[in-house]
Image (cartoon, rainbow, N blue to C red):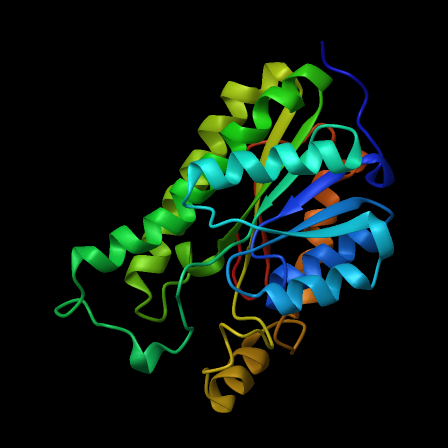
Length: 258
């Protein structure tokens, strides 16, 4: 049975790659609204534990490679045990080994399928593992929120991030098909898609001139921050979005339309 939407301060949220960059901004955004948050990390243990320490026992840091199904299932079970209730909300943010520097990326005549496969493991296998691990608890509660992090490069492929963009395009497809499949259980599935963010670990290699050019071309005349994108994840998790599923919200200051 589908139940009324939970307010943010009653949700238990898993943020993958939640210790650094955009993930850290998302973790802090949910924690700031009173949610109980699991900061998932792969190798950034020190950063994850430091972030968790800012919020006492409402935030915990747990290690899991999202590509490892057993590790993800253990993380979800540990979260439910720690907080005394199943996970209600997942944010699939983890990014596998990628740097946003167009000059350093392989062009169309150079890139191999192995590059695509690696990104699919992070952007498709990872979210699939977490969604399936959390689904039963969400279905039992009649409430669930799944938020996938995408990119505006679907509409504006101006840099040769071929493998990254293909994987995120597949994640958008998963978002829409899972929204239909899981909707009857009271689970919504949506995507937030940013552009270049100023600044995360992944975008640190981006030349300053690129940031300036994108900012100048944006209606808000500024490059989007991780905190601004994190705000959109709160919307999809909140009761205000209770009637929204299968959608992709672009958060890039108006650079890309539609």
